[in-house]
Image: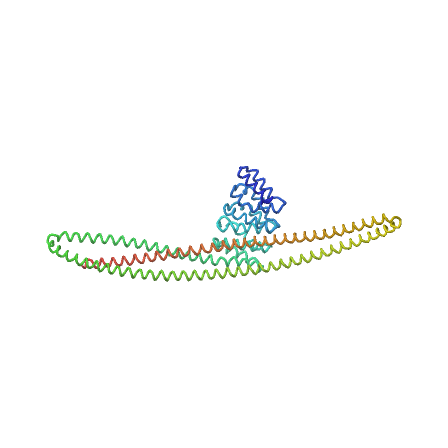
Length: 484
C-alpha cells in the first residue's frame, strides 16, 4: 500500500508521461520544499529516476536540490548526495556552475557535500574537475574535520591522474602551515600518490621497451632487404656462368644433376631433421621462459594482492573500531538523555501529585462544608457526597490515562529517534562501501593494464628471437649450398 508521499511522487511520473513539463517541474519543486520530512525523503530518493525519464526537470531544479544540502537531518542530506551520484556520472557538468558558491558556504555540510560530489565526478571525468585542485587543497585547512577528510579522499582520486601537478602544490601549501593535524592530512594524500607513481614508472619502462622493439624491427627489415638483393645478384651471376658452360657440360651436368638431386634430397632430409630439433629446442626455451615469466608475474600479483588485502583489513579494522567507538558514544549520549527524561518525568509526577493534594484539600474543605449542610438536609448531603466521590474517581482515572498516554508518546518518540539514527548510520556505511568498491576497481584495472602490456612485450621478444634464429639458420644453409 503506497503512502501519501509515494502517491505525490507517482503524480510526477504521470505528468512526465503526459509530457506536462511545467507541471512536472512545479510539483517536483514543491515536494522538495515540503515541510513533511517523509515527502522530502520520497522525492529525494526518486531524483535519479526522474532524471532518467526527463533530464530537463533535474537540470532546471539543480540549484534548489543543492540548496537542500544544508539539511540538518543527516539521513536526508546523505540521500541527496547518493541520489546525485548517478546524475553526475551521466552529466559531469550539471553541478559545476554552483561549485564556487557552495565551497564558500558557511554551512560545513554544504562544503563537505559539494567536495564529495566532485570526488564522484573525478573517478571517470578527472579532466572536468582539474581546475578545482587548488580549492580542494585549501579545504585541507577547513575549520571542520569532516570537511578536511572529504577533501583528502577527493584529492586521492584526482592524484591517480594528476599526482605530478598536485604534489608540488600540496608541499607548498603545507610549508606555510604549522598545524600538525592538517600536515598529517596532506601527508596522507601524498602517500597515496606513491602507488600511482609506481604505475606510471612501469608504464614508462614499457613504452621504452616498445620503442626499442620497433627500432629493432626496422633494422631487421633493412637486413632482409639487403639479403634479398645479394641473393638476386648471386643468382644472376650463376645463371650467366651456367649459360656459358651449358653446351660443354650438358652430359656431365645431367649426371651431376642426378647426383646433386640425391645429395640434395639427403641434405633436405638432414635439414628437416635439424630444423625439427631446433624447433623443439626453441619451443622448450620458449616454454621455459614463459613458465618462469608466468611464475614471476604470479608471485608479483600474489604479493600485490597480499599487500592490498592487508591494507583493506587494516582499513576495515580501523573503520570497525571507529564505528564501535561512535556507537558507544551514541549509546552513552542516549543513556544520558534517557536519564534526563526520567528526571523530568519524576519532576512532572511530583508536581502533578502536589497539584492533586491541593485539589484533594480543596475537595475536603468542600466536603466539610457539605457535611455541615447535611445537618440541614440529609438528602442533599448524601447526593452531594455521591457526586463528589464520582468526580474524584473520574479525576483519578483521567490522571492515570494521561500518565499512560505520556509514557506511550515518549516511547514512540524514542523508538522513532533510534530508527532514524540507525538509518543515518546505514547511509554512511553505503557511502563508504561505494568509495571502497570504486578504489578496488581502479586498482584492478591498473594491474590488468600492466599485465597485458608485459605479456605483449614478452610475446614480441620471443617472436624476434625465433625470427633471428630462423635467419641465422637460412644463412648457414646458403653458405653450405654453394659448397655442395
